[in-house]
Structure formats: structure tokens, C-alpha cells
Image (tube, rainbow over all chains, first blue to last red; front, side, top):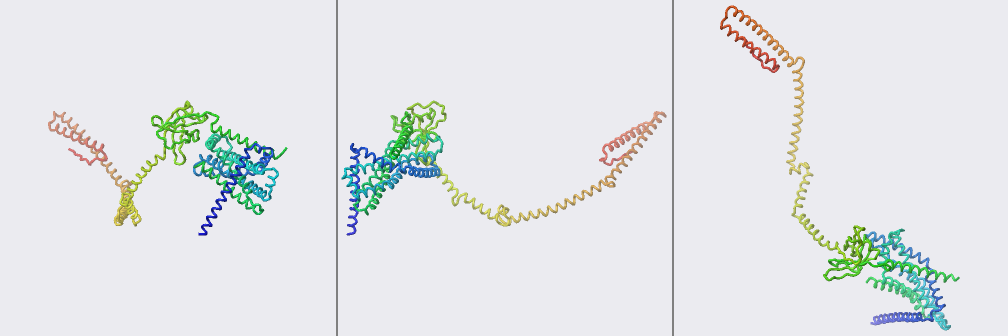
Length: 264
Length: 315
């Protein structure tokens, strides 16, 4: 009986904790959104931080990322094509390639890439700033951390994930064309037809929204996880661990919901 | 110059440019910059047709079904839209067929046998034919079932094929016996043995006949020698016959002499007196005899050497 009560209590504590985390994130997002709409936010300093964030999140890794996308796309296209040929479904190969790569796999991989590289860095940095009371010091110096530290990171994350996913998608479309039709313009009309068939307004809007949500998840969750860190140095790794787990769950949840909305 | 701002600027510009180009391409692909061509397809049934069903020409999608509904008369009207650039494949003699393959979704196939034909006007109504494989399958299955039932009937335990196979088994079983095929045809080893015995006897008989024929050949050769040798029977016969001829020739000449004698005798008797009636009668008789003898000799000469031995009668 005692064990059951303890289990229920622990479950309740967990649910409460999750609610608290979700509320914290929503409240943070609300504040960020309000700040975003505030004209005073958009000064040169904020803009510079956004540019710096975009540079570190997207531009610095662009060549590595595009090489990685090239290899992944080429592999996936080859596998899909050969499988489609084996089963006599070649006519569906181009559509399958575009759907799998451009709409699902590449945005997901981009989000994971950014989460592992920038998300973990953001989480650690915010956690250390929190432990070292730097955030309080900044606020004390009339440098609101939300405006100069957090909001630029959110915007940079969203822009980075959306842009990188878009570039990866274009590269994958090119790879798909080359793999299916080779270096001839002969397949341009049917390929255009397939693209036109897939990318209707809903799909494009959904893709952009999904990428933006991915970008938000890989920056917002690490920031809030870092802010939650108790002011003890040994809690920093725990904070990063929790933040990264939440980022992973959020990315999977966004992907699953997007798939459900699209195909169910 | 701030290198880091430059890089971000380049990245942003390139991304915007590529994104914008793709957007324009997408709008072009979706026919945003061109007119839409509309077509109405009249069908007997709307089975398998739904908005979004592709319309393909030579395997390439050129349009799709937009809406479908009933008209005033209760028929099905399917509205399809095409991009202006794809509408050029639609001709007045084009046929529209609804295909429902076993794998993949339904689609409407357009076939334009003559691309030189006048183009189909916008908004026209055409007939949609149906070729549904899945609908033919139950019919096919029924027929296959009937065929299988027949096969089952033929191959049942007491069926004809079973009996035939049994007989065949007996026959082939006999074939493996001592007398092989012969036994399988005749039915038992005894009968087969009788046939082989008869054959053996025939063989012996033929051997003997062969010997006999050889002997007869020898005899014939001997007969030839006997008959036609330089001193053989044939030669002797020929000589004898030659002698007979000579004899006959002698007989003829004797008769001629007798004739002359008789003529003289008649003349003498006529000169002496008118002669007597007896002598005249005698003369007639001798003439007759000579004539007959002559005829006989001639006949023998003509028919020689096959003539019978003629009898020469003299008066």
C-alpha cells in the first residue's frame, strides 16, 4: 500500500514537474514574443547579436553541413531508386525521394545537427551564467538578458534551421534529379510535374512551420533548461543532460505531429 | 570590412536568392503564370475517381481531377484541369480511359493517336471509358474455378485418367518383363514366347530356303551348259533340223521331177490319141498331191523351228 502511494506520489511529482517546465517555457516564449513585437527591442545591438548567432549556428558549419547532406541525400536517393526498381515502382521513385528527403528526413537531421552543436552549447553557457550570477549582473547593469542574450539566440536558431533545411532540400532535389535522370534536361518536365504535385501551399507552409518549430525547440529548451539550473557548479552537466533530453523529445514530438497532420 | 558580417550577409543573400528562385520555379510548376485548361469527363460511374486522381499522357501526369458530381440526368460529370502547356496533348480524337491497376492508385489515361488532329476546345465534354482490372478478376476467378473443377473431376479416384494411368502402369510393368514390348502388347509371357518361337522357326526355314535357292541356281547353270554348250542338246537339235530341211528340199525336188515326168506323159498321150479319161484324172490327182506337198514344205519353212513334224504324203 505504501509502495503504491509512493509510486503515485512520484508520478504526481513528475507530472507537476513537467507542467512546471512546460509552463516555464511557455511563459518564457510569451515574454520573448512580447519583446519581439516591441519596437524598442530592434536596435543595432540586438541585431548584431542576431547576426552573430546566425553566423555561429549556420554559416560557420555550412560546408560541413552541406557535405553531410550531399552524402546522406545521395545514399537515400540511391537506396530508394534501387528499391523502387526492384519492386517495379520506378514511377513513384521521384515522389518518394522528395517526400522522404526534403519533407521529412533533412529537416529532422538539421534540427538534430543544430541541437547537438548549438543547443548543447547554449544550454551550457546559460547554465554557467546562471550559476555565476552573470545574468543578475547583466540585469543590474541595465542590459536585459532577454533582449541581448536569449531572444537573439531564439531568432538565430529559427533562421538557421529554416535556412539550412531549405538549402539541404534544394541540394537533395538536385541530387534526386541527377540520380534519376542523369546530366540531361530531358527529365525536367516530369520532375517539375512531380514537384508541383507535392509542393502545394499547405505542404510548403507546413514545412516552414515545422522547421521554425525545430529551430525554436533547439534554442528555447536549452535556454530554459539553463535558467532552471540551481546555483551550484556540479548541477551544470545535469542541466545540459535534461535540456538535451527535452530537445530530443520535442524534436521527435514535432516530427510525429507533423507526419500525423500530413498523412492521417 | 567586417568579415563575419560579410559572411552572414552572403549566406543570407544566397539563401534568399535560392529560396526566391525555388518559389518562382514552384509557382511556374504549379501553373501560377499560365491559364488553366478545363475539361469535363462524362462517365457511367464514379468508382475509383476522386479529386486529385492524375490524368496521364504517355505515363506522364499532365493534369488532375478537380471535382466530380452528378448532372441533371443523373450521369457522372468529372471536372479536370490541365495547365495550358499540357493541354496541347489533348486532341479531338483523344480517348480517355480510367485505369485501376492492381498496384497504385487509379488514373485516367489519355491517348492521342494523331497529334496532328485539331486540339480539343477548352471546357469541352468527353466520354470517359473504364478499364478496370480488379472488376474483371472475379469473373476470371469463376472461370478458373470451373476449370479446376473439371480437372478435379477428370483426376478423381475412379476417373478415366486414373483408369488409363492404371492400364499404362500394367503395360509398362509388362514391358519390364522378359519379353519387353512384345509381352506388353500380347498380354502374357506365354504368348510372347509363342511369337518368338514362330519367329525362330521362320528364321530356320528362311535359311533352308536360301540353301535351296543356291542349289537351284547351280542347277540352272548346269542346264544352261547342257543345253547351250558347243556339243549340247541345242546344237544337236539344230543340226538334226538342218538335216530335215535338206531332206524336205530333196523331197520337193523329187516331186518337181515327177511333175515334169507327168507333164511329158500327158503330152505323149495327147499326141497319141485324145488320151483317156483315166490319165486325165490321174494327172489331176498328181497335181493336187504336188500342190499339197509344196504347201506343206512352205509351211514348215515358214514356221521353223517350232513346226511339228509334218507328214509328207506322197501319192
